[in-house]
Amino acid sequence: MNILELNDVSYSYKNKFQQVDAIKQVNCSFEQGKVYAIVGKSGSGKSTLLSLLAGLDLPLSGKVMFEGQSISEMDLSNYRRECAAMIYQSFRLLPLLTVSENITFPMELRGFKGKKARERARQLVERVALPESVLDRFPNMLSGGEQQRVGIARAMSMDSKLLLADEPTGNLDEENSVNIIDILVNLAHKDGYCVIIATHDLSVLPRMDIVYHMNSGELYLERR
Image (cartoon, rainbow, N blue to C red):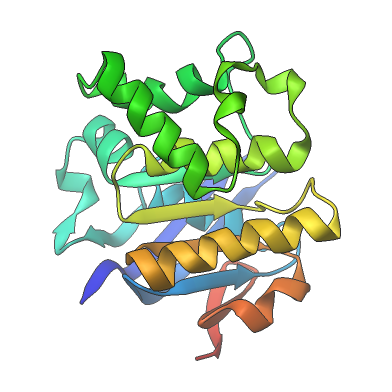
C-alpha cells in the first residue's frame, strides 16, 4: 500500500530576477518497506520536492497525499510532528541539549516525558549502533557520523513510518556514509519504514530499491 503519493504536483517561486518552476507536474508513489533515492544535480529540484513531501511547503497545483489524504487538508504542524520525519545533511541537533534531550524533544511535543522517554532514547541509540554513554554528551562531543546517527534516532522517536533524508551522507566520509545507508536500508527492509533519500551521491544507488532522477523540476523513474 502506498503511504505517499504525488498527483500532478507543481511548485514555483519568484526571486528578484525571475520565476523559477522548481517542480513540474510530478507523479509518483512511495510504499512502506522500501528505500528510494531521488538523484539529480544541485538545483534540479530534489530538495524542493523533499520539502513538499515533508509538508514544509505546499504545492501550487496538484496534491501530496499521505495515507490517502491530501496534506493540504491536514494540520501541517501535526503532519510534520507525527507523520514525516526529516534527517538533514547538517544534522541540525540542538547544541545546548544533550543527545538524550535531542532525541526526546519530539516525544515531549507529544506529551511523552520522563523516564519512559529516556528509556526510549536509550533504545533508539542502541538501534543506530551507538553506546548508551552518548546520551549524556553534547553534539559537539560527537563525530559527524555519530551526530548523523543521533539525527536518525531523533527521527525514529517520532514513531512515523516515513523518513525523509536530505543528503544524509553529504558531510560524511566513505565509511560513515556506508554505515548510515546500512541503517536506513535496514529501517526500510526490517522495520517497514518508507525511506526517501535526496542525494547526489551515486555510490548509494546500488543499495536502493527504487531510483528516481530529477532534472529541471521533472522526475523520471530511473530504476525499479
